[in-house]
Length: 598
Image (tube, rainbow, N blue to C red; front, top):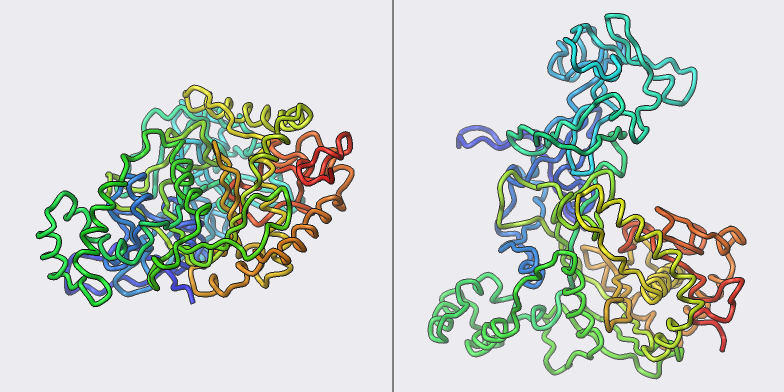
């Protein structure tokens, strides 16, 4: 079972005699990376909180995970597991939003001004946190400015200092039925609060608030337009999660042994390494001093400087993984403690369009929370400008999770792929998605004040991504795993044309053999044939197949929830850049699908 992580409403005091703080709530450890990370909001009972910065987390320094390639790329020396439920460890919480309303007397004001006890008003009514907050694209967050809203942005006059009340008329289900009433007689409904430019029109500016950071006074002079959001909106927090697979030599048992000591041993003599390895009790009948020395020297030789361009971070990591996935692991060198093993299938590939199939019988993936954004998901156009800080000052560690499992790697035939993507009709169809992607990148680049990045979308990247979705949907019917229990990892950069479908669980259920069996040639032929047959028809056709643009920001063509989309946790690209027409053909060119009969 996955261990839970604990949340705390206050930081542990430094006085030894003081009791440990009580836990406010708990979530799964993995959720503290993907859903309830630093800066996200969480509802516990009838209260609402924001997860505090890393300086307020009490992590167990003995619970680490190691992935040298990822640590080097992110510039940190340690990766700690999120704190588990414990009297001594936990992630701190702060109350947010600050505004609450009373269900009985409808009073709307900061939480600390209510005179009741145990989250009640002086009138005895229960308190509920504000439904509405303000956020901007730079990650800032604040309470909704109810006074400025009801007084229509009159920030240049003295406030009337009358009590505000939130009254729900119940006449409709729209925001028009929620009224903010001031004691001075002014009132305004919440209708229009979610319009993109409404707050700017009322001269309501972003406060630059970062309530998750200790002692933060906000960022003065933020020029981004604030946006009204529901407190529980998915757009209120997008985690920037980096991940990589543990691959040789980093995945070997000896390399894992030296992880804690490598920084100290780098550049040292063999004698020093041998002596310190013995003192650390790393020497055994299976691991000799020479093994450790060779592992240190090998890491020194292959270590490269961290990528200079953050936009290429994922590409650099995946290029190394792709090379390992294409090359069978030497079974004579695989140890019981190794994290990575792959081997070719027994037999020929089931389709001429497929160049190689590898069975990944062991893998370990490390996922690191690097930062987060709000309002808009992160993109290459704003690589680092919109990333919100996880701590007040720079720390040398980040929270991370590791998952163990298995998978199947499929590489398409490079010869057939080049011939297919060189056809003009394919380029014309893909150009529709590329244009929409360039518009999105240009809009985000303009908002961040950076030059627009060029689109990296290509015919092969859409093809491979869509194929991964079809296989996951098909294997969810055949393997015993749900679609949400599988993930895709796409390799579509220069010189790459593959996909890895693998289990993504943080317990032993991810390595029971159900996915590896899907790589058997006969089974793969059957499931891929079935997936392609399903892709030829969608119950939303002809609208789905003939759509000129669909999905978020028009980044899909023939792809919808009925035929192609996956649970968000399974997809690398938020269910965008998909088109089943490229696999099986489209009405005008049914013969131009990559898998269309010749």
